[in-house]
Amino acid sequence: MLADLLDGLEPGKPAIDLTVGEPRHPMPGFVIEAMDEAREGFAKYPPIRGNAEFRAAVADWLGRRYPPAAGLGGDSLGIIPLSGTREGLFFVAFSARARKPGADRPALLMPNPFYHAYAGAAQGAGLEPVYLNAGPDTGFLPELDAIDPADMERAAAFFLCSPANPQGAVAGSAYLQKAIELARQHDFILVADECYSEVYTQAPPPGILEVAQRETGSLANVVSMQSLSKRSNLPGLRVGFCAGDPAFVEAFASFRNVVAPQVPLPVQHACARLLAEESHVEASRQLYRDKFDAADRILEGRFGYARPGGGFFLWLDVSEHGSSESVTTKLWQRAGVRVLPGNFLARDDGNGMNPGEGFIRVAMVADQETTEDALGRIVRTLN
Image (tube, rainbow, N blue to C red; front, side, top):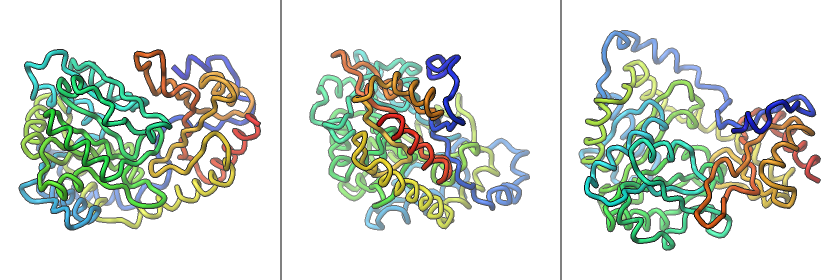
């Protein structure tokens, strides 16, 4: 879509591409060494449920990342490796759908705007997407009390992203607790896309498993999707994990055993090493803090900017300067800055409203100098 919009248009200045959320910070130097340590594993089919080292590393990381009172780990927690979060998000919809074979017009609830893999999962699994607007008036998260009970009753799953892509909004513990209650009341799977959980500039975002276990002592109807793409700057490694409701995770593993890719044993070993090491995560987090400090200074009072709670995107309100697409075109032709129109990330809500219209998404993934240059160009172009 963006390629079509900008087709044939030349950048007005040397190009800076801030469209794709691909981390560009240095990857940990020991990851190749870690895979080499386990290189003999490339000669074996890896188990779909992961090996003991991998599952233990995930459980240990969850126990350190979230308050010890959460009681995560042991038999109460199902864990399986994923080939990155995206494939997990796609395939989990099929297993969620299988739990409600007799549902009339089964649905998948999702925020609007949203990560496009959610809509792909709905289409693939034969679920009707129900778009829940997440704009400034709801804190950029779906308003849970406004969801039609009939939609919740027919829902197989609810995909919830926190920190949110694209807005960076963080769901607090009370919000997550309410979502969990709804999932159990209407018996759908609450799928928490938490791939940005380690990219924050202030307080660490709460996690869905932490809240579920602390408040109810159960992980029923709840799973978390995580990856090392953002946490460890390794989008090309394609490794992550699903953890949560043990009965559902086991059913999900059985489904994946037939149709989904396995995670190679050397990659599982590298993942275990990466989850045990936090210094590279904090170093990357500081780089993001520095860039958001620059955004605070350069964008102050403009475009509705407020420092997001997490993630590495800016969600800028440019409605005073035109539509999402016209502003995107202007920034490319005049400033050489390539951003993503907000309306590309959302769908019409059925009432003639696209909640992404009037916004642009800016990925804060380049180095400090390039980021500051791009933000300055945006300000000067739209003044």
